[in-house]
Image (cartoon, rainbow, N blue to C red; front, side, top):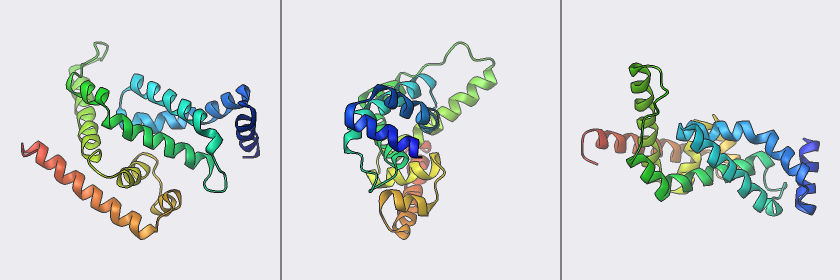
Length: 185
């Protein structure tokens, strides 16, 4: 923890390259996993993770350890970037023109991967219709396995508000996905 604080101070003061590299290296795998759980595509996850760290380094001068931990601040950047991606034109285009990679082993594996990816895309499309706070709550709960209390601290909202928004958003997503499956959406 003390080492992390030193890296942050060095980057904030003098854009210290080695410290920036150490910060990225320290958090890379967990941020990549957070992104991958949402997009279910390795190359896109790699690209988004790289963009998240670029954003982190561009805005690190504004990081204030008195307001949040570095990890919490970084995940806020990652979550915002994922929200931006799912609202982007490039995401909507990739969903419409999706393709199957040829190196998949079997027809059953292909069907399983397509079904999983389609379900994640349905979830993301429905989640994109929600406000930013609701999106953050659901992402932190589903993709980071955070408790309602942890999310409340991160978003600086009462835990009861977090719970209410989470369950309301989940009901909304279920309804949206059901309507799309039954041709109403």
